[in-house]
Amino acid sequence: MKGNEALAEAAIRAGCRHFFGYPITPQTEVSAYMAKRMPKIGGTFLQAESEVAAINMVLGAASTGKRVMTSSSSPGISLKSEGISYIAGSDLPCLIVNVMRGGPGLGGIQPSQADYWQATHASGHGDFFNLVFAPSTIQEMVNLTFTAFDLADKYRMPAMILADGMLGQMMEPVEFPEVQAHPIEKPWATTGHGGKRPHNIVNSLYLKPEDLEDLVRQRFARYEVVKENEVLVESQYTEDADIVVVAYGATARIVNSAVKSARAKGLKVGVIRPITLWPFPEKVIAQAADSCKAMLCVEMSMGQMVDDVRLAANGKVPVHFFGRTGGVIPTPAEVLAEIEKIAGGVQ
Amino acid sequence: MTHNILLAGFGGQGILFCGKVSAYGGLMAGKQVSWLPSYGPEMRGGTANCSVCISDEPIGSPLVLAPDLLLVMNKPSYDKFIHTVTPGGTAVVDSTLIADRDEVEGVHIHYVPATALAEERGLKGLANIVLLGKLLGETQFLTLDEIKKGIEKSVPASKQHLVEKNFEAIQLGMSL
Image (tube, rainbow over all chains, first blue to last red; front, side, top):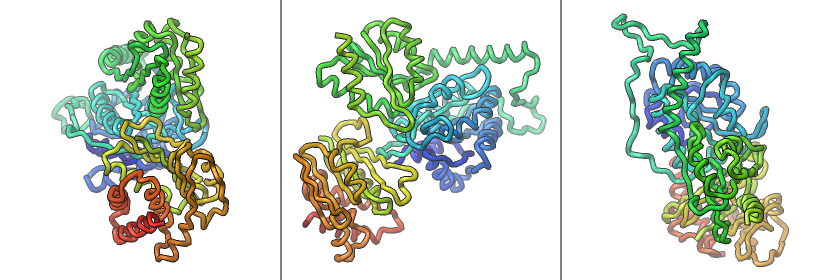
């Protein structure tokens, strides 16, 4: 299955019955799949008049406690950022998918990872975070969709799947897990109750500064729990590595190919692949920085995650960067050349 | 064993379909596979290409830049990719549509008038599969049975009557 289709099918199996979107390359297959399937299973597929409308529909549907999602690609996510902030400020769970393409502006339509900062640090105004998951295979597109819905519900916050055009468009075999939806009680949901209990209010407007500060602090206390418990990361060959390469998503696949070649040449190179970008696996990177001699961050951008890697490494080792941007996909050979350049300095 | 296959031509020649057949064939053979299309404006009348990896190991980069197997159906793609084939690799070229006859050291290039042959034999529109048959016959990158299963998987339910025609095209390609 195509990555976009696999993700859509996983969302349905995870219990999502409401999809609000607006088409944009390279994620349109998510919408197309939902348009085909939702009416057959009693769900809602709605192509909104704009991205702004779509994300506000997500806000409304999420208020009722239903599993709901939207998907888009980079420029569309920018349009959705106001709504994402409102959803976070209302403590609502939902899934937002960004199949990244080159930017800024309308940019291009080829794969990119230049929305890392936006996804992890500034997906809207105000003090808040989203859960951000970065799949690197189609199977992970599926598995992380389940995880994203579950954790969004658990922590009452938006979750984002941050993929890219390569993952969205490529096909790989997938298996859908036996375990399906894990619905939980949502006593906060506005479901209509005929006066049987005090009514629930979904809101993000707090005019008294002290009230707002209290609420934001409560939210940040919850973020600490997320950071403690929900980090996902994969490490390979890091025990004896002189050089540790950090990469996520589709780029991590390219890095894996390069690292395999480097190992075959006798270079001690390892890979750390953050699977959650927020919470960021800072402890794993800090530990690796204790034992390796240098790090290399590879991204399809001018260098965004590298900032977080440098913060985590905390000056213990030099953190180099290699990236291609604008929709250009780095090649394993280019990454290998960077590794060899650094290895020359290390030895 | 890993095969990195690149298929390229004009949009509408069935390049992506041909890639799908190969990927599904690999899947049927129990291999790891990936299929990555070029997407976007170039698909409308411009060049279309598609990367397929078939491997015993998990696939790293799914983007094929140095194929060991190349199938090419138009001049712009021929110019772009014929010199990217790795030494020992194999290329099949539709010589009805491409007049060039390059020789690349270490690469087995087969020039097959696939489009003309397909029309002659009542297989119009299946030049892509004829070329795939030639590639299969020359390299055995999958078995005929696996490719046939790949065809059965890739032909949409509404066009099942075309499965047999595709089998014919594969066999024609293999016989050349």
